[in-house]
Length: 246
Length: 294
Ligand SMILES: Nc1ncnc2c1ncn2[C@@H]1O[C@H](COP(=O)(O)OP(=O)(O)O)[C@@H](O)[C@H]1O
Ligand SMILES: [Mg+2]
Image (tube, rainbow over all chains, first blue to last red; front, side, top):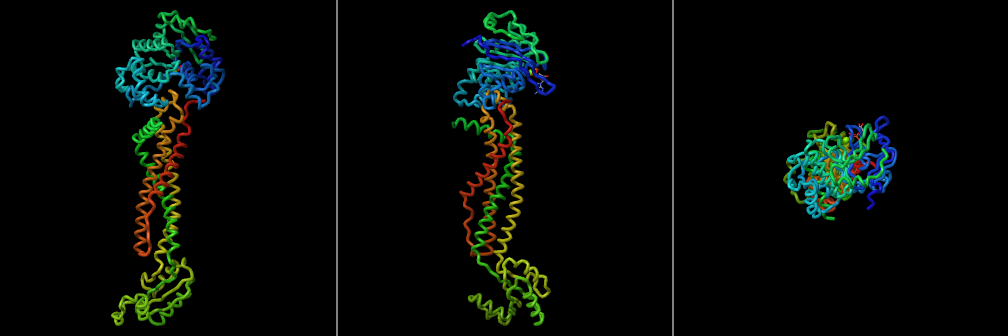
């Protein structure tokens, strides 16, 4: 695996929601395999839009987006599912289904992508273990803490064993302590080889992690910095990071 | 494969638990539509076949009031002969009437009645066209010399069938079309409700990369089940109404013979029609369900 080849590349990408409203303007950004990137910025700065361009919930209106060697302008409705199976998505707005237990939530998603019942009952405990909520498998989401719920949503995002994880404000409703805990889980997944992109406006938490920070304002990148690693493992990611055009 | 089908059916069935009132309304209306269009269409063909077998009878009997003078009777005869569609009219007075009755019913001894004749004077009429029966009957009944309700058609069964057929054709087709449209809209709305209620599930399926087929098939299955339930209810309605109609016909003509509806083929037809109908409605309702923008 060539870790230095651009895994994700935005080249002067615009997203226009209408004639007057822009989601992104002239975004150029390169992310390599195995990187851990925080997308920061105030509400409305374009973090969700950037993630949604990758998941094809939003179509870019100008520029070029490459993902895993594929030009996203070639994606048609029939190929969207295949694209999404290459990424784990932790959406901002849709958490776990309230009427299903934690393991059912994960199992349901697996069934939806064609896994058999047998595969589900084998894989779900492993996934829940991976995000440390196996002991909560039989609980309903309302019985869990906010952090546990997010872990459940992350487990669900991992069902296709994707190389990329996109998390949109996963710590939005968490207190600082749980936020740090959740970010540590994401770091752990990153250590296992996943590329992680996290949108957040939680600067105090972000700053505790020595990671790349891409800061957005009004749909533009205003800063793209690599912090001094505070944790050993981050050194690897730093060493392999490609060149950024901000 | 079985595993897949099980998932899709389970998904479709959860929708029934969710909006059962809407489903109930949709199924009932669909049933009415299928009953009216399919069922009455079927009854129509059956009745027409039956009509063709029935002997045609061009005779009418007109019973006159008691105590008419000979002159009044001749006048009545003249009036009837002048009606459009009347071929012949013959006066059969009560005495002659008894002779005719005796000829027509050789088993019944009539000698007892000769002195106390219960028959009224009558005019026997033959018609040129059988379809004129109702008009002629109506015109005769307006006359002063006729007994109240004193016109008998020997063709009542035929007329009854005829009114059934023309009635069922018009009412059935009109009502059936309205019901078909209403039922379609109700099934459509049921599926739209399901889509709204399952917004979260569908979005999650989209995000984990489920195919459009997986997301949409449960909706189509739901629509098909709605339609098939409609077909089933329509069948039950049809089964019993055919029985009832046959009962009426049998009471009018004991020579008629019936075999009821052919259960297997009719059920199969109504179920398939319902399935196709529900499928079309749910396809329309779910045509904007997408896996993403592209
Ligand atoms: N579906 C949409 N239609 C119109 N405008 C939108 C839509 N989604 C986002 N926007 C606009 O795009 C800009 C960026 O939004 P968003 O990407 O959601 O920002 P963030 O996630 O950083 O809060 C905002 O001005 C927002 O109002
Ligand atoms: Mg956002």
